[in-house]
Length: 85
Image (cartoon, rainbow, N blue to C red; front, top):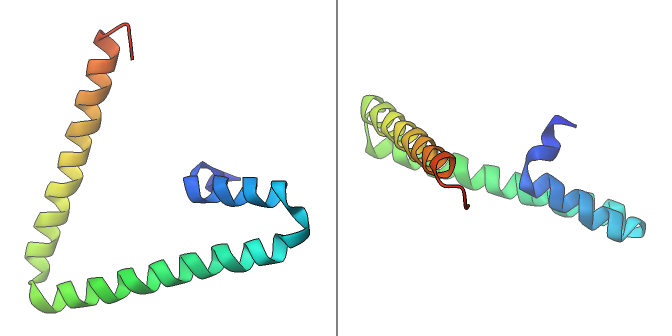
């Protein structure tokens, strides 16, 4: 149930609920999509690791997470101040 927060899982859940007869096809489609996307990320990660030193990758990923955190914090602070979303 914890995975239902993911948009892809919610879409899979709703698609299966609309057409329960094809639940095995929905499972195969969702499984294949996850497998293919994971495979592509592994390939991309290995190519990036060949091009950049691990220290640079760690710094860039840290800066990316910090930027995302600041963006979310500012967005929430702005929503808190404004009575209208």
